[in-house]
Image (cartoon, rainbow, N blue to C red; front, side, top):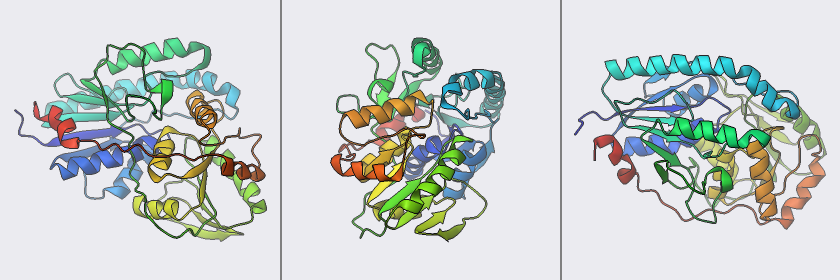
Length: 353
């Protein structure tokens, strides 16, 4: 049995979702007397450093993921960028090998970082994408991802195993030989009974240039919205900026506590349909409207699936106009599963139990 309690937690820097959904895991590790060491790059690492200023952090190579300006070029851009990504993964593997040799880690938790694992230490991969949707190449991209997942000791899926669930075919396989654990939806936020202050909350995230493109569009659109708006731009910067723009209170970013309050004080939410956002909104039981990132198959699938289930309406980025928010009234909104994860049991893996 290992005496070490140090665990490397490494989320992918792709938007903010991977980092934010690691927050409840890091909190649970601290509650169970583990010592998390944070490892990522860019805004994902900055976000975790702001949340956990007392924890040690390590910078990993940047995957250099950028989205195409046009949705239809999404796959082509990803293919073009893949050599940069493979180079970063190979560098990352070397860093992890060296770290495991030099330090006494009792476990590794990687949220979608493909090179963060070790044969010498129990290594966990967190993903809701057992199937990676990529249009006509879905079978191939899913197979590749599943081969990578097999290199890890366990794969934790932030969803429930049975229906109803949040991830649909993304997080559920018809037949699998993977060592899977469904750990329930992950969210750093909690529902609170607070008076409604804002008629609309706009929250952005995701890689550039699409984040900025949607921001510019929505700043134009909210001019025609009657009601009070809180607008969170999803730009992690050294210090928080806050200004008033017409009927909007605008912030560049918010940390968990302030964000939780803003969500709970808002009547409805306008955002991307990223899986972390879906989990947050389910936990908070909020009504929402989704604009998926153009060309991102996974977000388009989630948005269509939730619209079909009469939970959340959606529109494409090009076709969205603010008057469409009226449709939210006819949808049920997302709701939470009464699921509580036994983290002590989950973490036994790291103690050789």
